[in-house]
Amino acid sequence: MTATATSNRHSIEVNGATISYLRGGMGAPLLFLHGAGGIGDWAPWMDKLAAHYDLIVPDHPGWGRSDMPEWFDNVHDLAYFYLDFMDALGLKDVNIAGNSIGGWIACEIAVRNTAHLKTLTLVDSAGLRVVGLERFDIFLSSREAHTRAIYFDQTIADRALELPLEGDALDTFLRNRYATARVGWQPRLYDPHLAKWLHRVNVPTLVVWGEQDRIFPVAMQAEFVRLIPGAQAATIPNCGHVPHRECTDAFVAVLDRFISGVRA
Image (cartoon, rainbow, N blue to C red; front, top):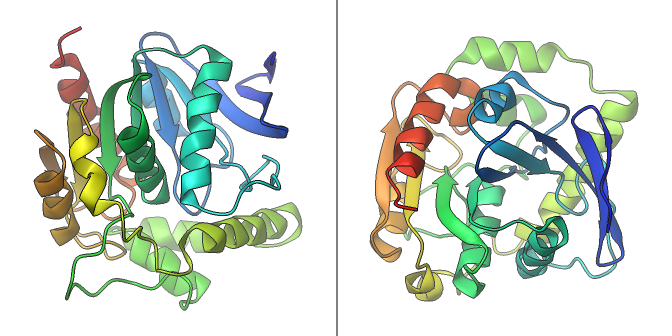
């Protein structure tokens, strides 16, 4: 399983699927798992993280430029896949972080096996249901409504909506929507069994939330902190669902304080 590279873009075959991933920087490994919208190409927020870490950002199986493997049916398949992915890259003492669906996948990895992991960081994570808490339905909303719900700063949403959705961009958008539905259509973006197993997470854990998240309200943060032993919480004000993109400097500072505070 040899990786090939063009700039920051690499590919590797794992379990019969060709997986595309971005990699750059130096230092301790940081595996960042993206949300429903995918990752696109190397972005400014990745530069900030790569200044501190060996940053690895895959397209999940079925998203972006990665294959849609026959074995991919649910979030549990993705959790087991990433255990094999880390083996394939020879990764150890991994700091794993995930946003939204990526946070959910990271949780499912951690309840199964933390042998690869040094820390876990959840960023406005899917995966849990809080009874009585209303959430935004990403499947029943328009592209504009969804985009505006992601960001607190609506000028960022304006710029995102100005980008034409056609050609390859439309194909990727539809692939990502389909893959997201395989993971989170029913029940909506949570695993009814996850809560009872989060006590198995035995690595230092940080739960980061954008205070104005409209996709998963900040009240969900407390439930993750309650269920994961010893979990720490950090809330970023004036920030929506994607702190790593919208509030990059604040997010990197919070992440660095957490990871540097974990003993080797």
